[in-house]
Length: 273
Image (cartoon, rainbow, N blue to C red; front, side, top):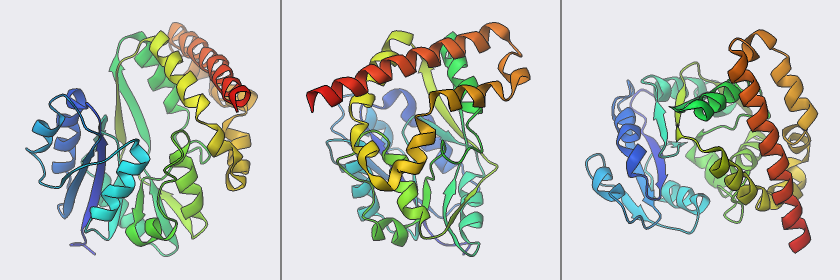
């Protein structure tokens, strides 16, 4: 098991700002039997120049990350596949812990908790929000799988651009159980603009309908889209929420705006349909 290859799949598109630290964090893993598979969506920045410093396994594929990820898995040689994004940094023991967890009987996937970081007030709000989701099954999706299990469910639904991580996890989880690592993924949010965040929320909400209509996702969907349940989750830890009152209020304001604009996006999609 110690020399089993893990294929880390990284989809990119104009990812030059975050890619170097992402790939360096993969190279710095305590587990050394790793191949990096990078699938680029026709970037026009320095993405490929940076990638060539870390791997020769470079491919081009579009139009969206689900197709990129599936193609990366098809091109991989590992027994295990680890799907991450180009704005993520892995703590040094993540892959080693994933291999250890999936080696347990009945385990078919591994969830790696995420912690956000970035610049400015809104990035700190996002960090606080994400901290409430650690250990909440319906909010976390697995990223580490046996390649054979991934292929047996046909990987990501390539028509699904929003909710695709949850969808894949729920299909693979039918085969067994998921375990969690203690080591974290650090998600680089950069400098968040509230306006851009809300525009992005509308965009993905418009595309959420395909995830929502799949019957296999209904149980999780009812929890994921339960606005009252989300606020109850936040207020279940008031000391954490209001340790820094302005930050806590800012996070609640940002999340309320996201719910509102996400609802608008979803309604637009329904009307257009």
